[in-house]
Structures are given as C-alpha cells and as structure tokens.
Length: 250
Ligand SMILES: Nc1ncnc2c1ncn2[C@@H]1O[C@H](COP(=O)(O)OP(=O)(O)OP(=O)(O)O)[C@@H](O)[C@H]1O
Ligand SMILES: [Mg+2]
Image (cartoon, rainbow, N blue to C red; front, side, top):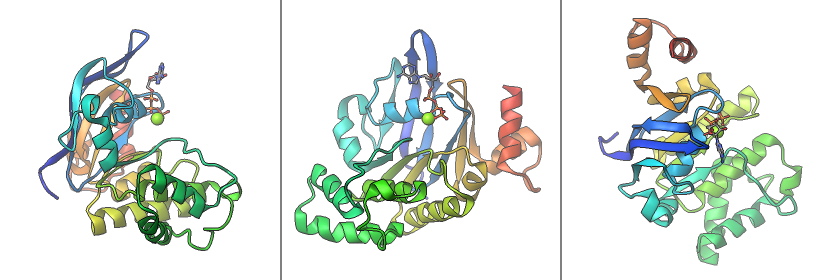
C-alpha cells in the first residue's frame, strides 16, 4: 500500500436547508487501501460520496480525488472511479449481458472489447450462469453482483461502494466482500465502502472513518481506534464495540 492519497478532503462541507449534512470533513484514503466509511443513517456518507464524484457541489471546502477537483473535473474522475450507488436501478426487461452491453456503450467501449470485458466481469462476479436471465427476475444479491459488474466494466482504479451489503444474507454478504478483497489484492483497486455491516467491514477494511451528524469523529486503523477509545490495542475487540463507544460519547 502506498502513501499516496487517492482521496483527500479539506473541510468539505454541505448544507441542506441551513443544516450541515457534512461538516468540515477531512477524509484521507490512501492508494491501495480498503477504507470503511461508517456512521448511522443520515450521518452524511452518501452526501460525501456524491461530492467526491462531483454529482453534488460542496457548500464550503474542497476535495481531491485522484489528484483532481470534483467541482472542476467530474468527468475525468468518473472515468477512473467506479460508483455503486445505494439503490442501483436496472432495466428489468434486459438480461445481464444486455445490461452490461448498454453500460459499455455509455462508457464508449468498442463493441469487440465490450464483448470480452462483459464475459470477464460476469465471470468475476459469479453471474455467468444467470447471464441470460432477465434482471427483473434477479434476487437482491444477484442485482448487487450485477451492480458491481457494471462498475467494473470500465476497469476503474478506485471503487466507491455505497451500502455494499444492504439486504444480503450472511453468506451473500461474505461472498461479495470476498470479491471486493480479491479486486483490491489482485488488481490493486482502492476501495471506499460504506456499510452498516460492521462484521464485514472489520473483515476487509484497513482503516475506517466514523461519521456522526455530518462530522468525522474518528479515522484510523481499527487497532488505533480500539486503543484510543477502549484502551486496548492488542486484545480481542470488535469494530462494533469501537463504533458504539464513539457513538455513545459523541
Ligand atoms: N437532497 C437532499 N436534500 C435535503 N437534505 C438531504 C438531501 N440529501 C441528504 N439530505 C440530508 O443530509 C443528511 C445526510 O444524509 P446522507 O444521505 O448523506 O446520509 P447517509 O450517511 O448516507 O445515511 P444512510 O446510512 O441512511 O444511507 C440527512 O439529514 C439527510 O436528510
Ligand atoms: Mg447513504
């Protein structure tokens, strides 16, 4: 893992109706790491991701993603960052291959290359067998996998995964998280993921950040946070214990 910062924010702030959804956020994500973006509902995680992609403009402060300013270079950032939104929508009448073909086309990938990439990503996310089934008939887990496949089509170097494991059963969540770990290790992708599934986050993340009411109350490795808040760096602890402690004390 390098020391190069892929994501850096400088007092990034977003107001909605006079209320700060994100307040003076200084987030750092290093190249090659898997960063867990945690916090209760409404704490500002999705709002932050939207600003990092240039899909929402900050009220104050600024950000750099891959060295680029999302307020100016949103297109270039979108070419490098694969974004899985909280609620991915699909055309229910298309099958997986047609869905991915559509996305490849939107990304300007030539037809012959698209064909190859589609097979590659279907294999990667484990949807080969279901590739010709209409997406309307997909289960939640299959849709989530197809969402990842869409994100991977353009071969991004960074992944933003919002609520990756939402609605998945324990086995489905484990498999999907394993896939993300594999992409991180084999392809060196930097990953920023939000999830309420702290067990899975603890399994995969190098560092985490905890947002509460739009403020980042903690940022670091789990060992650092355990030491800081629980006074134990080397003993057994769970991310849930750490998280709840910050939550209670905020
Ligand atoms: N478009 C909007 N207009 C007004 N308020 C908004 C808008 N989007 C988000 N908010 C508010 O900003 C705050 C942060 O919301 P956000 O969606 O970023 O939270 P989150 O951490 O992603 O929550 P969750 O875990 O539920 O997805 C909330 O109070 C929310 O109501
Ligand atoms: Mg959200």
